[in-house]
Length: 582
Image (cartoon, rainbow, N blue to C red; front, side):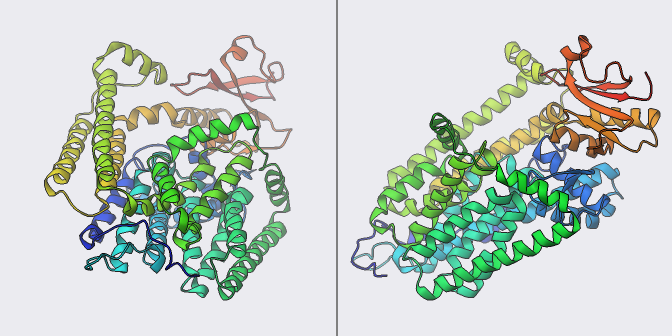
């Protein structure tokens, strides 16, 4: 395809393509992923369900399918459970030398997040680098020379895409979960790399795409693999690839189908009921949104994809005459594919929004060399203002919670964490102050050094996002953990089971959600059963139902345990009933 007759919108001199040292990128990633990953319990729903399914893989030898205890967990695929279970088997015995078995399991289950996060960032960086160093992506040659070398230009834009990913607001919490979400993000980022790699190394790209197709299916089912299939079909039809490359693209699809068939057939022979349940979930995964719900999805996407989406739109506009060039078409078709899935998925939300941040960040990077200098500087000042305001807000909330100033804010917070011990942790306070000093140092560096590189505008946004998340983790993690953890409730239930039913064979769950079932499996080792004739029944009900004595099996047995989370706000209550005592 010939692009030489069109005028590129990118304007850049070689000093603006100065790359960042690789160790800086590594430290950015390491601080980002460590903050908030450890020192807390798994939270409902997907976070604790992920750990429960990993533990079930080891305890019940479920390595082809996923379970929560002995209950099929068919909401998603088993790949997260398989990888996490392997980490539990390898690292839990080591961590048990220093902590309790439960905490050792939790720590070990979070180690794969490093693998997923670094894999995601590698896919984004390297995919962008390969696109940006291509001839059609290069900036306009200067009259007397001085334009950057394609390799330097590619590295600069890859750094920008890297920082856009770190700045993404919507993925910060979910990427720290022990759920399928971080793995799905890694898969889609590496798949993007594979589609780009096809352009210069078809064999390698084809292999990567085929593996990522089956990995996406085994992670989130049809919803997870659908965007990649749409991209595959679109690139097969579009004139981006040559005939030879399209042959390799077709082979990658065949590879993905064959590997998926191997997994499905093997899992069916091992556990046919799980596959049948899983397939029923896939059949109801898609449901076209009503037109009135589309504005809500767009509103949610506006904050989830911030700050990359405005720059992604600018890239599409400024490069509109180059839409059929790979560096615009491939990320753009990724965006379109994910939007199609979002608007056709049943109850689409953060898990479906997440992979969209990858293509949005890469498109946003393509906009940077087309922008005026004052717009990039505006991003600097915007980041300084918003992040500083955010840090002040975190401190105001901390002051309200621990010092009672302002009093009204404290009352509002305590409604969410009723019973929380708000004695001050001075180590956390000192760490919070150090984090704020670090933000001051970053601003001082930016103002003093005044770097000419094009990544200067987004690096403050990325650093601000990391520092805000780090401060929130330092000052607020214990309060958030108190609000969302089931540890105390699970330990209370475990003690009751040990006292009243030390040799129970099965417990039937009634109205117990997947997240709660997972939490009780993790914290109480309770294996809820789908059998209807168990001696013991665990009921999830409400305070009003208990007060009115209108819960199930009220007259059939004896309540031997009643519990709820200390910070429960919605009246959620759990009852353990012995049906042999009435």
